[in-house]
Image 1: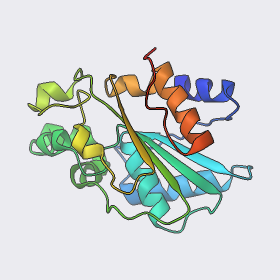
Image 2: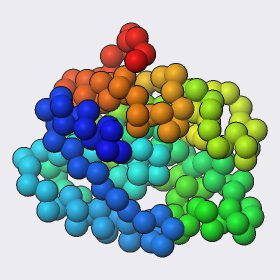
Image 3: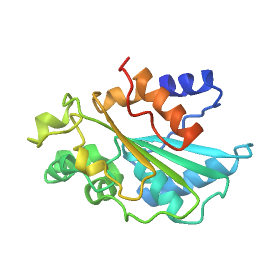
Length: 195
């Protein structure tokens, strides 16, 4: 996330990367850690920008007792409806180890209710290059790990699909620009050249 954080910093959004332990800590413990992390940030307003499983953790955090300063959540390639790749991996002992203690959340997704007052933006990729293709034959479109349908949130303020891979979502300058546009306007810019 450091590349994305740096790009947000340069656009006037001081960014911090939150690290969590997917192998050793379950979802509830990671949410508790996120709660403490957010509480210690000195800012009037907060925005959460999360990639993949991080988006599911942030979504669950916002469903509980959360900091009222959080105004926005932008999810990048987050399988909010559950991941078919995770379900396939979980079918084997080695796959269960790879997924760690967050496995249940990745497999099943999260309840699709969100408190009012939080803007939600969803960016998904459709460049089907990634490790997920070696685990599961995915129906198009997908980002190589997460299928587009797994990222969809009906109540999102806006959503956007870009020609990037799952990992590419955090390295793309276009994605960073779209995140900034959403933070500023509550919408994505839907006609934009890729960089």
